[in-house]
Length: 512
Image (cartoon, rainbow, N blue to C red):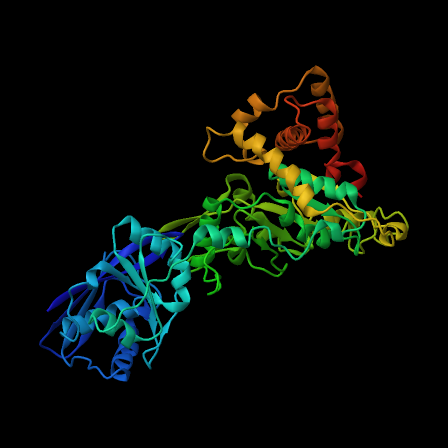
């Protein structure tokens, strides 16, 4: 008897419905066809043991299982439950009446326990789009799927629960999540705050500009000056995630298997801080079974690269294209997947190997050649893509011991949100641009106009600092953000001057 059940596969962050066709006929051997990988081929052994463990029988006949469409490679163990129910239905141990109305997901253990799977949120979105009644899946993934309203989410722990559900011997209440309540109850809940940072007002100003315009930042300073402490607090002043951004970000974390079972929706912006030993594939994504990398996991959030020159040159260079396009394309011989990668990059580095070049009190023991060699580990093209270069100096004892309360993240965030509202209104007609850092060349010429005095100021800066055309554009974008923060319709000379002074690594005294 031929029976069809349905499951799903995820490619990139989009899901495709897979039809599992099971046919049992006279014969001895069993086959799985439709481009299965080894994990799928091994599923028959797991399924046989799981079916026996719940007191049902595995047919001793020829079982042919086709995973359609047959030209898409099927990977992973999430097909186990769908295949098992197909076999039980085809052997008439379950009536197939309502099986076709549900997507079936789950990996089976030998004792019939159902294990969690990845990528449930994009699958739920696709299931609703294609008109399925619901999803039967592991209980640990149920809250994640329940974010999509209008589906009957059946969370189960064991195979016998699924059998009883389809035999109409038990009723499993649908998992329900109040998305708005879930989203709002945790929004902007951070354990850290800018009020914890003593002094460093100029650095806080730079990070506020970065947050207001979505600009990339590099912090250069000696050890212990507070670079990491400041970088970790950048997400606390970014605008709250919108529901749409939250869903998109949650999709990526779902596909990567990094969503906790107690979470249904990410409500705070991601902060990713990979170690400098990371490989290029781990950073941008890929592999034989492509997974999102750190730049995609940081989508709509912050990617922090501490000790930037210690990262391998190849790792840093692969970031150049995503920093411009805000997505990463991973191409293999038989398929191509796109992952979004729109993040704020914040990097930190020492100015030299010993860390004390340009230090106000301590002497640097590195020669000029060593300083130049150290700085050259970060390529010019990558630095060009970083809008704000900020020198971090040590905090004086008087500031550290002061009892004066610093400004809270909440107050800074309010100003950032106000500046972002101006930008949202400005780019309302463009679905792909939401802040000044994302604007293209055409928009730049229209929006970032300056007067003759401003042009002369910028011309002198370009000639003295030997800036590239890309750095020119970056200065204009930062100046536009500063003007937005001041509520100014036009870019004034003081806005340009402040933007120019955030190009520390372009100055002659950083050349060794």
